[in-house]
Amino acid sequence: MKNYEKMIAKFEEKYPTIEVKYEVITQMFHENILASYGAGVAPDVFYVDTSWAPTFIEKGALYPVDELASPEFINQFYDFLLEPFRGKDGKLYGLPKDWSMLALFWNKKLFAEAGLTSPPDTWDELLEYAQIIADKTGKPGLAIYLGGFNRYVPVALGYGAPAPWFEKPGDEAWFDRPEVKETLIWYINLYREGKIARENEGKTPYVVQPADVGAGWLGDAFGKQEVAMVISGNWMIPFLADQFPDFKYGEDWDIAPVPKGPKARATMAYTVALGINAKTEHPEEAWKFVEFILGRDGQHELVVKMGHTLPSMKGLEESPDMWPQHKKTLSFKYDKVLVFLWGPKSGELEGKISDVMAAAMRGEISTDEVIPTVKEAVSAVLGG
Image (tube, rainbow, N blue to C red; front, side, top):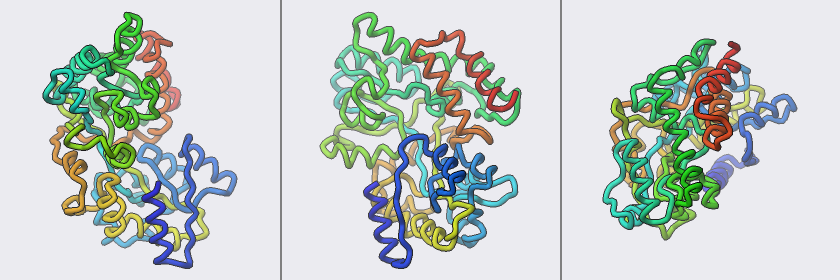
């Protein structure tokens, strides 16, 4: 937030006739933005996540940026980050401001205390190491979110499942695949057995959610050194540097690839566009702001030098100003890097599937009920 305010100040200095009003929405962001259209108070420029981009495009909420940007400007961005923002009409409705991918963050001191010398390489080792760390150090080995379908998907891909895609009734059959059934229950049992069952036995849990250790999110739990491992994105790196300056990268913690399964090593990629309101009364001014933030100079300042995440423009990752933590995440070799998008209703589906997973993790429904319940939820969204 502080870095964005710095960039806005630079923009207003360059364009003194354009005033930017910066507002933060912390809850149900995309739902609130969509609702603001009905009230006629939608912002001129706002974030659009890949998972919600199809919904915003379908509703005509976004201005086609290829009517504002030159082809030369657009061609500087990575194609795989542009695709989620392309409509069925072939027009481009957003440009990615940056991107991140999941990696394993591990606490070197807690690993050493547990007698471990390297991060886990497989999903089985992740579970094994989490248990060892809890038993040897009294600290949970791993923190995860309750639910979080997108965080589970790399496990399914690692065991041979195809990328999930839900577009029409019947696509919920993805959950009937043996490798999906097996890995989804394994993922849910991380918390059921690692937290609930362990505490019932009077033992230190080896898996927790951030709130269980007094943290607001995974980065907070890891930075406070209340857990030894989390799987999170590049956005966690500047947070750790800013909020936990004495917890040093390389000395106290390190980054490793997301664990692999027997079939593949997979990770998730995330990006967000700066979308322009299709009904804005100031399209030229809005584009000037977007171009300033997303352009090569803007990304070099905000994304590379300030260390936000990974640049979405080709070649910027070669900058000597790139943070070494981010560079390391780009050095990892994956068989699959999947952009967060499950189909035309990804945002709604992510929420529905995650709700079922969270209920199962808390023990509110049995593991036998997970697959039929999640299929019913997906089918309802798809109109089946």
